[in-house]
Image (cartoon, rainbow, N blue to C red; front, side, top):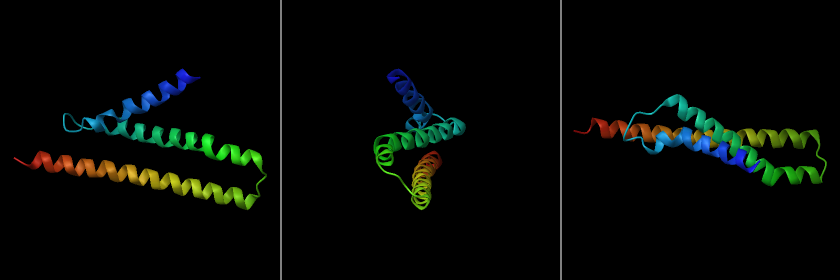
Length: 102
């Protein structure tokens, strides 16, 4: 199981590696988007497994609490995605400025 976890995160790093080498080559947008998507999914599952799952198992929740938790998680994921997209946009703008400079 540990090997599977290692391979999963290695795939995320491989997908996001072009962002680290942005100045040397172009940005394969599909690969980076897949990497960002996998990162959000895997990080969310890791967060849930380490922090939330034990808490949920220990006590019963009502429907209102489940819906509030779901809405909170969706908002949290949307904020993370927004931050990552803002970072990618800033990198693209910076790269565009550098390529226009003589």
